[in-house]
Image (cartoon, rainbow, N blue to C red; front, side, top):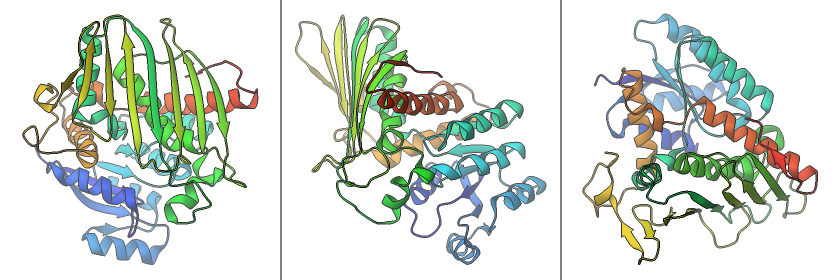
Length: 364
């Protein structure tokens, strides 16, 4: 496969997620990073680009226009900025006919999300959203098992994402924008709650109709939620729950998903990403490993650990395949609808919390 020429917006020197995306994009040799508007500061943008050996732009609008006009211009661009800066560059590149790979959540506001969706529908360029955990092999295996009926009818869905790094008034580059409502749009429900929401929907194939949310800002003076307890009701009759927190002291990145059906149960935890616990009804639990994975998402033999970075790389590899015309894997790549679903989840949580936990419809 000829590598896809890739650009990047954001992700300059010192940016965590930008470096993650660059590693993931080059892991399978399917992308070639050639240009970037890596910072809104021209000097920092130029320095960051020079370190990477790519063309530099200080403005993403200029980059979109210039790259679209080049015979060797970028074919896709990764947007790895804070939430409030997803919409403008994504729309600029979509309008220029350049595919967009965007970090989650989709945007900071419902208005921005709607504008992005309109740009996707109006053009031919594709939009991809990097919910990396759903690209891990055993998560994809769980999805296949649910679809095959291994659990029977789903009755209970429980997703958790627990962190403790914002348990006080931490101030650093990563924390400051995430706790600023103007930049983030929401707190824990946007930053990690959308991951839990998407993971549950990806594996079960179901999205809740209604929810009831209790949102808290436990750190004094914090303007966004940092802990959320959310009850879910599905149209199928299933019930569920999501607990996300960034003030759970001692928790580093505690993402997990548990499903219970009429015929069996599944459990997956990020701390042990290569294991899936399957318990058929009235039988002992079984630990499934990548030896049972059928998604062809692995790079090393079972027992050679793969994890966070490889999940991102799986998405990038699949995205490259779709861009090059292979549509066989596109159903497992999050896109604009997943982004809109995440934004509807955030809005419903905030709406419910403002009404003391009233049950509200999830308007996707």
